[in-house]
Image (cartoon, rainbow, N blue to C red; front, side, top):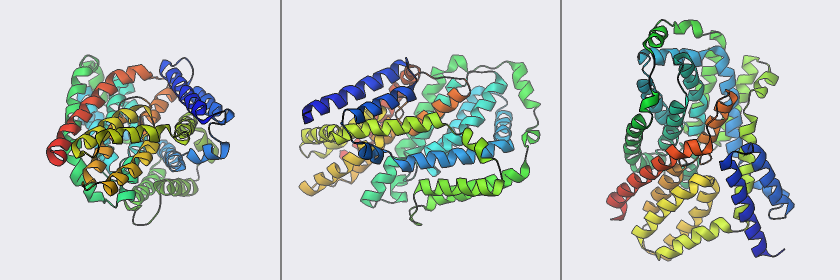
Length: 426
């Protein structure tokens, strides 16, 4: 088969697979599996190359943190935090949404957004079950807050880690340049969510009173295991913060923490591994192969080059186009291979022109990270939350999320556009 036919076939398989994922006629992991296998069967991508496209750093990080969280939840700590949070807010769902969203955004900036939702999502579900309210408003707010917060720092989101490692931009560079617009975007997003979910954030007074009668201390089941788990979690979090200096990948840190906790907790590994969200893990694996096949055919690179060629070296046009293309593309494609493609292209602009390309890195970071809020498959945190909901017999549909996430994502990119124009591109 010719290269052009293979390219069209790859695009066709990818679009069809995503179309079925959106329609939800077939389980998303099943159809992603089938689409990935078709890419290999039709020799669009070789099996060895397909395996190479899998980002085992992301997979390792997910598995490691899922093990830690599954051991930690046996201590009752999530129920404790849930009851404590609900009592501090006096059972008011809007205040709970505000509190958990703030915690999620800050934690995502200091850890990473996947680790954060793995820790906060179980707490959220405990609260919503106690108050007998729909968990969707709080879970959607959590997804949005995780991706927004993760945009602010070097370690908050994988695209930022990639940009930092290739450019030499440090932890404080990201905070100084990205934290201001992120703070504005977070406030605006939460303000809009209050109006979107206003009708759903009501709780009966008797349930609020019932929450106030709960004793959070009785929720703690195993204090010895809790101390061990929190100690290992703290060491793991410290490892995330220092991973650049100790020259260790975040996945390695997470897996080291998971293995240590399994060893010292003496919990049954079969039970712990059974509780891992394997459907979510394999969905990521197949998604990496699907996007990797497009990358192998040069589709992503062609799109990126076309975008940059249109700008003809104009800094304002280039910056805004990178911001918006990254935002929209990252809503539907995995942002890791997209950013991997964009980095050398932005570097080539610097070599071929006299413009300072530093603003372009901030445009790429803002677009790629904030764009993840657009759809349910736009970022790792989104897929993880969807998997947790399914495990608790709750389901959020692709379109249900997109109706809220995509417009809010466009607003966030709009705010980022104003920020970039005023401070970097004017």
